[in-house]
Image (tube, rainbow, N blue to C red):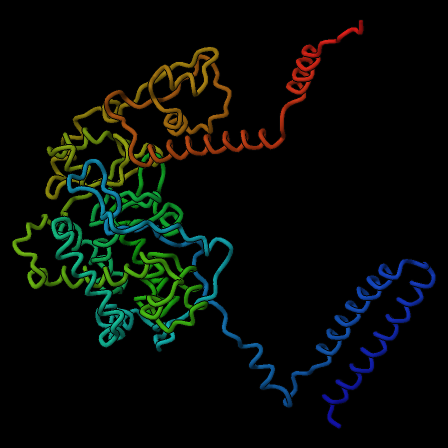
Length: 527
């Protein structure tokens, strides 16, 4: 008999003895307490389960990692673990062909034929199991290999009827149904493509990913979706912040064509490391990595194209990768698809200057001898009338070749004239709400500009800062926040009314009805 068999025999005897002892203890408890049969049976079963668990633990402990069972132990201890990735990292899945255009954009609204998806919450509870493309794609050791395995160089759809049909449908959509709007996207893309390609090259990623913003936003840095995703790469706030973008009352770097591209490149790189397939990585960029992992696991699909025949992903995600591939094909050779004589925008070129104190945008334009519109287009991340005052210095873009003239002109302007705000002296009884009514400035703006939380006791005589008249107007995110707040208040009010209705009439109402009934009674006397 081997040493391992001796251990197993001893463990079995120990378990048997323990079960016998528990049986006797339960029987004595029933007799001593003279309890009800069912109570006694329940107590006995609890003891039995505890005893079985203890015996099983003893048997497990008795196992050795000796040579006889080394292979069994090795297999158990080397099970695949999911790869780690940033929790909650996802872009807005509410993707349209191009997200909602801002009022300043004269090119019309987004595509009406795409329905918004819901924001994925799959990553909120923890790291989902990572599913790597089963078609043979493996995570590359370097991104030189990743660059070679781009969606358009992937032969997985070359003979795939489902893939070819989906891509062909997207091509027809762009060149026939929405050709005029797609033309605008192609022409606008030239303004940002070169600086975005430079970022992708620096991250060692495929340059053709530069065409993803065609599907995301139509290359509109001010694009804003119904789920409050912003910018050319359509980041939601949580993902943008996770990848280093600053989003506050003064600026939103999701709109910055350079900084947002850096964040998107890092996110796409993480998704490719997770799935080992660019098609799956792009699908996860749209729907969220948790949804794609779950879809592959539930459907037992081998790749992205297999998911198109399941109900595990939404129609928008099924259309997302084919539309990206179709858009890239057209952007590379537009003439072949009937897009002739395109009037491409001039590439974005600029100088950068760093200012050590806040400065109004119109002052920047004056110093650079250009228009406010040009400064706005070069710095779309600026939400207000000036550079952020909550940082020690800020780098701003100005038209190429104007750096020297800008610095010369700036020195001639006194510091107190570079940044304008208004002051309000607090009076007795003032609240945020009252000040907002008096000045016409939203309460949220007052709170943001003065680093308040809205609950402070305002001291009479103190000064608070307000935006200058004529230079401030709420942006889309401000208006969305207001609408969301109003909707929340209405929801809470409706909830209170429903709860009140379930409780029935109040005591006062009941007493009033009782008195009314009493007054209506008429006593009759017998003759």
